[in-house]
Length: 270
Image 1 (cartoon, rainbow, N blue to C red):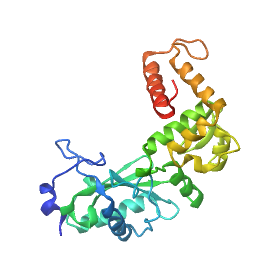
Image 2: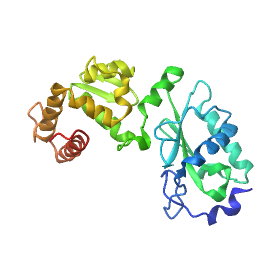
Image 3: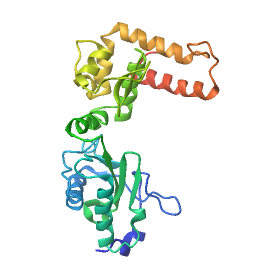
Image 4: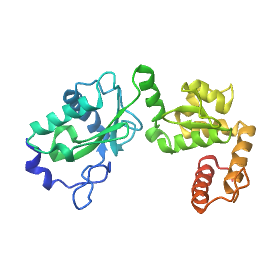
């Protein structure tokens, strides 16, 4: 079936936000859990990549997903090679200009994919996310973008934001891309979840503490010293002057207030 024959008639719904019509409406929708695996199977045929075990974030862990995030090893297939295969697929379906189906940004290639390869079911945004290359970097990307899905009351974004604040309270920085680094000179410390857990919570914890916000909340409740550091961080963020005694600008104060509200929501501290 040629996409262009029925594309206009599809009732577009919420989902990823990369692909938009000329009137600004979103061209993709949320995908039901039951449709994810069959859609990925078609993506494997299109790209020639093994993708079923490369899902990221909450994909396959919630009743519906706003998009499908997939890890790609650039040592196996480059961005340009992937784009070429996607273009070949789109043009084979009668689309002369694949520009509205494939877009690149940062580490990602975005693709407007028919759910179950059937345009009548609508489209889902697929984000092919390229890591640095190799099995260890792929493992790290899966950890960095991990989400507990429906088994947690919090999102994957909440998880990473709490990890970032817990590191910040101890003079460190956490990034889902770079791992744990020293705040003073940006030097890397580790991308090993067990090491990161030890650095943030102490030797009693391992990487499983990061499987959910609830796990981190429980670990924090058993760590009075870390709770005090979080409270001190909240006080620092609320101060109108920074550590060097300089007056904070309004934009910085707004950003700090957002972090304070996030910390209170995720830790229960105030």
